Image (cartoon, rainbow, N blue to C red):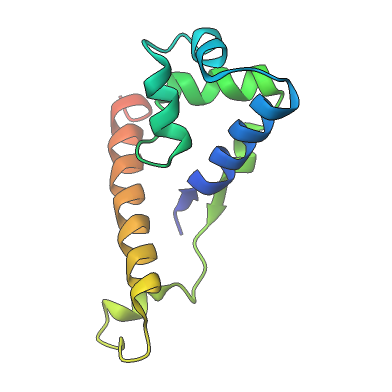
Length: 117
């Protein structure tokens, strides 16, 4: 079973790190070598994923274990919807499903780009 990236946990830790250390988005963006603070804002809003480099720099900076952001997919995820058993699934679960699919596709691309050379 593949491991999934916990974007929610990463965002939570990113915001907590900034708050705890009284660091502005501008300053943290600079520390992570981002082109602009708006890139960090997009990550914090969950609108984009961190690149491999940004992810690793943040983990090093915040002294976080990289493995702590990866988890195994549970069997009771809303993928039942794709199997035709979606009568009891609400719109929030469908949205979560779509986010998980989008995340998996993105991470598969990153995996191919950086790890399967």
